[in-house]
Length: 328
Ligand code: LMR
Image (tube, rainbow, N blue to C red):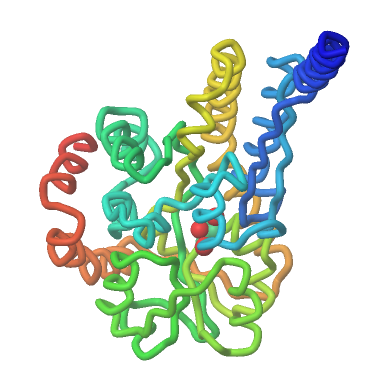
């Protein structure tokens, strides 16, 4: 009798094991932007490649547009293991206790994508990822979006035009200081709430790469857009370290390959996506697009570069110096 029960138990355990082996590993990838953006498209590309390379052993579920979690919640969800992949903006790691990524928010620190890539593809980028590990997070890649421009309901041609304006920012102390330098009033707000805040006048303006402005329809509720391109916005693709390290080695190898290739894709399309979005904003005709002259842009640079020095104590003079060196 005892033996029969034991045998039945073994058969049942065997079946459970087989069923488990057949169940795909599910990766929930949550993000806050529209699908039709550099990040949205790259997340979809990762899904396609990951499922293909693991022959279905991994199933990726992408949740765009804050449908699963908003900015702050998604970080907590990753640490708790409720989602496995995120790609938050580099401006959103402060609340997690990692300030270093805010170096990417320093106005005018990168002249173009090439300069930026010297950091994100180089040793500084890797050193920054190491700071995430004590938080239970592993950095996998950097994905580009692009350079931010200011928008508002009043014309913006010079730094003083933003004086006294309520400006929505991401949760970064560097961005807060940037706005204070312009004598405007920074307001931290989740990305999912920006459109409504602009529409109802809770804030007067904001800053974003044009792909975000366009896909969230912010151009419909902002009368003016000045192509200041004063700062960079990009992403760290991150995972729960315990989850990633615990994956079967062969699966992880294939996922690393999918990450690498979706990163190449993301960073290849980012500029074009933003150029096309600008074209679409112009066509929509709802916001006046202002192209600054070289002198006008220089005036913004002059007004905002002091932020670098002021933020040394927060993000580290050495880190800022190593970015200057990498990009020079
Ligand atoms: C923002 O909050 O403005 C951006 O970080 C959104 C994003 O993920 O591009």
